[in-house]
Image (tube, rainbow, N blue to C red; front, side, top):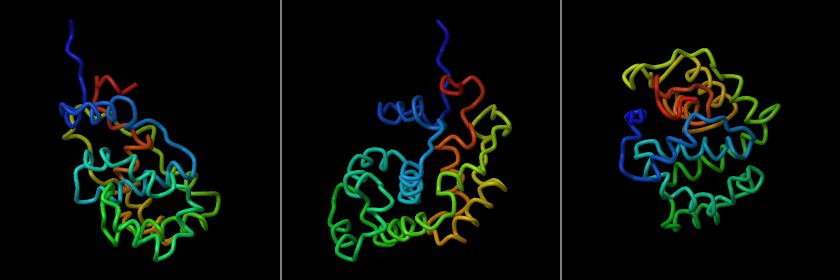
Length: 182
């Protein structure tokens, strides 16, 4: 029986992490609220382990009204205080306030957030042989970050933007032979 090949970062024994790699990472995600969720979670992940965010994702969804842009955009300082008291999420004031600001910015994006992000898709990106071949930043992630910032988004630098691009399928960075590459 042949050995199953996976991206090295998914080699953790945690079943949640493995399922995320095998069933979600790199698969296309579309729709403004769904893309907004991923923009938000990538921003919250900055400086933390992705596994930390995965373990808290359902709490994030409950705390942020399922990442419904219109609901989050209407949040007040009372909501920020509520979120800062929620032990089920990452309680970082700057990231919480950025999420509210990002929801408001998303409402103003002509054509919607999903369309804006998806215009940076790169289906012709080379297939990485190993994780060492996967960049942290690309010209497309720099351009995406710049455009998001021009619309008023926060916590969307080039590295976070590239992680978003990988996560929602704008690029497929599963290594050659990875079980999840297809």
